[in-house]
Length: 138
Image 1 (cartoon, helix red, strand yellow):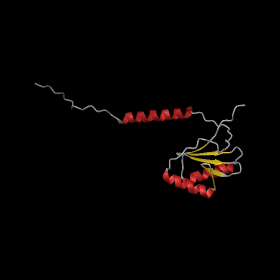
Image 2 (cartoon, rainbow, N blue to C red):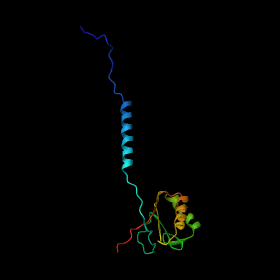
Image 3 (tube, helix red, strand yellow):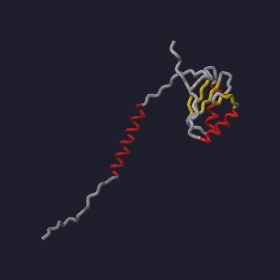
Image 4 (cartoon, rainbow, N blue to C red):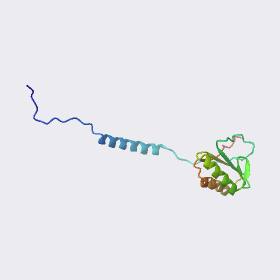
């Protein structure tokens, strides 16, 4: 003879919602702590001299250079700003994720560098960097 309990039989369940809440709280806490751990600082750098003898030109990236007089070079070839926009637009249609490196003469004006950067951004490139080198030790 079976003896039954007067209480109804309940199946055990694992409640996931409180576990998810705890995990989101831990994730947010770790993210906030990691943001406070980064040390932000600025450094002063001199822009490198753009010379035609550089050997770091690769076909899978775009190299732009600005000399002291404000002339722009697209992979060692002098170009005007409208021609630069046209060439960048063609390259962006082919490969949108191509990195663009802008190097400039130490005597180049900030306005010339920003003008080239603006043309690159207008063409749609997102991976843009300035080539810099530390000053050589005397």
